[in-house]
Length: 202
Image (cartoon, rainbow, N blue to C red; front, top):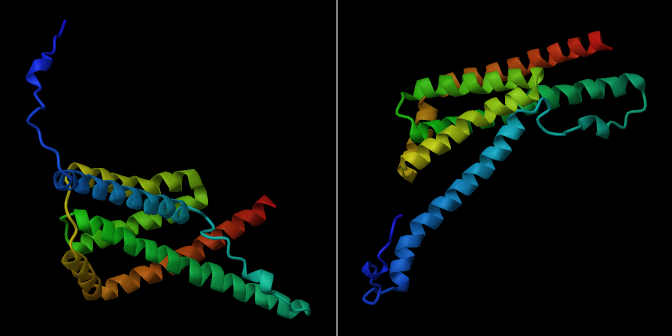
């Protein structure tokens, strides 16, 4: 049986102060707030990116054309704007966010991080057309893994470092443009695939 000698804990000489409490609790509260904000952002991130239809935009509802030809033409234009232009831009935005997440913690070369981030986003979008559960698991895996690494080995993020990341983006602008083009083409192909599968099912 373990016995604890309470007499060894002498608190009569202990002094507590608001300043000391602030110094002790401030890093804890800042870290907890940061973890919450990051987790909330990642939660929205992976649910957004892993959807087949990223957001419920329906431009066809603004179609007021009465003639069948113009009505079909409006639907086609709305489909192109919604699924081929707007969707890829949103996906590409999350690619940039993911690059920032990984760059902050990783020590790998920036171009390697670009390749890994784009490969992950591409795999997530392909998975979304196969099974959204799979794409959700894939989308949240890396961001939450990065959070675990950050908690284990806390690394403070400076504004200088963030500006350095944007500078690296600018330096690799041609590669980023190629990736944007890939995102647009990929979404077009996936939409065509989904349309063909839908026709066969009907």
